[in-house]
Image 1: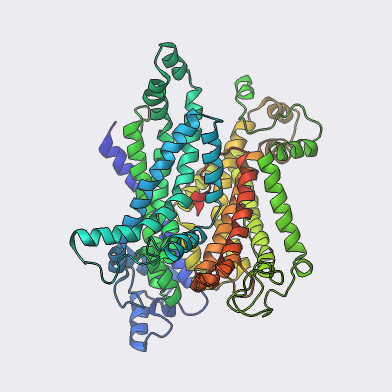
Image 2: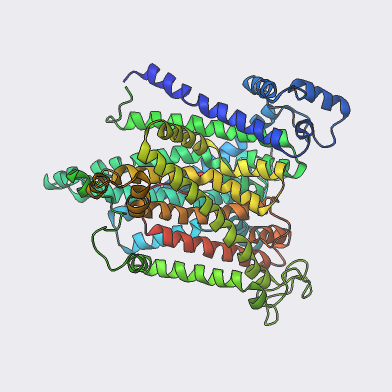
Amino acid sequence: MNWPAYLTRRILSIVPVVVAIVVLAFLLINLAPGDPARVLAGERGNPEYLAYVRHKYGLDHSMGYRLWKYGEAVAQGDFGTSLAYQRPVASLIFDRLPATLLLIGAAQVIAIFGILAGAIAGARRGSLFDRATSISTLVVYSTPVFWTGLMLIILFSVELRWLPASGMTSPLAPTSGYGHYVDVLHHLILPAFTLAIVWYLPEYLRLTRAGVIQTMNEDFVLTARATGLSERAVLFRHVFRNALLPVVTLVGLQVGLAISGAIITESVFGWPGLGRLTYESIGTRDYPVLLGILFFTAISVAFMSIVTDVVYALLDPRVKYA
Amino acid sequence: MIDHEIQAPAALPSTRKGPTRVGRGFRVLLGRPSRTIGIALIALAAIAAVFAPVVAPYDPFALAGTPFDHPSSQFLLGTDNLGRDVLSRVIWGTRTSLPFAVGAAGISLICGLTFGSLAGYYGGAIDHLLSRIFEIFVMIPMLVLLIVVASLYGRHLSFTMIVIGLVIWPANAKIARAQVLTIKTRGYVTAARGAGASDWWLLTRRIIPNGISPVIANSVMQVAAALLIEASLAFLGLGDPNVVSWGQMIQDARPYLQIAWWSAVFPGMALALLVLAFHLIGEGFETEESHRSVF
């Protein structure tokens, strides 16, 4: 495979997506009721700042010119200034990003159990284990993530007092070193577990299970069995490897879209990441931040789709992107 | 042609036999106990929604008792922080959730079926355009978009419903397109075309009726997704202030978890049961698409 050419083409393919999102954000601002300058400068913005924003985005000019100015600013990584924090939106987002990545990463680690359980359930289709995992994950999958988070808070924080209900650190805990890591981990358990069991684990389990069941019916599995391999060897060397391919795609897509789950989970647990920032910005009507997060998440999803395709191509030699 | 006949997707009901279309539909729906449970739950919610003023013991907005009353014979599910009856509010909540979610999924179904069928049937430029649109829509995290829209344009339930429908339809279009592509080469379609049937007749009488079931299945899952989105927006403080919403109830109850767990527990249970009901029905159709990815 010609990797440089493939990667270039794949990266260029997200250009229309980015352009579409710029146009969408532009339309959202400009079609909103009221003055678009007020949207970007805040409802209580002073006259000088209002005039500055008006000039910067060419708001006295035609729509076409305004779109051009807006696209120009975004292309330079300028997503405007947060009204509540009085800071550039981009730096605010990057400040909050590590906490969100930690939360999503931890949730993914927990959700790996869904892949394992799905593989076992698929291999033992119809067994008690299969039915129990399918039903219980479907039930949890049907609950709203914020409600499940609150229920876990009632159980583990209010009643049992095992885990902290909110935040990332305790006020009296050490701020560096081993003690700090333990403190953060302690705070991480509930939100990561909530996000994992409601958002990721059920989907991974279902897809892995379906993949294993489908692969078990393939001819090469029959051939492998006919050569006298043990059932365990057939499952591990032939079935699971092939069944995991679609899961890779889902994991990639989920990591990109995880921000939606993270927004709600962080709002419940006061986890200081992008989701919490979104929640605060709703309250303070900080439109530049909300639009910046919309951009950022859409571009992360696009980026993750490329990463997923590349991983998929590395794993499956049949895939040709020539 | 014969090849295509053999490769009919498993999700399609047989086109050859069966009593009547309606009879077959009922048999498919009631075939599994899980689906019967799903239908029963939805029926219950629908009855609660239609007859809410009759069934609910109190006015959902009235301060019927004292705040934080425990569940009792007078207030079966207790009262909330303002002394409103939780049971009545749970019942009235179906009036908000159910029409909202079904409406959003309905808009998505109509748009998806129309554009997907046209793209699959005619191919060419419209097909190309649809693929591009789908690629873009799938990248936009819906919850974030809805947060921006609701913040900028106000928190009207019907407006949010339309926006959701207009964002999630490409998933239906993609499925409808694939179905039309398979079915349009079948023997009975080519035969009818040979006999002089028009494109419109072929699409509406032969192709769509035979290929619609995976699209319906996905729409059922989209109802579940829309239910969760409405509640999530309300929980984030972007719900319509003029209606009773389960998500809003849970948000209101949040500061008082330690003293009045019931006002958060029951609305969440009602929502989870209704979402589960739609999942149980959609489940049986065995679609491989990931439905929450539109969220």
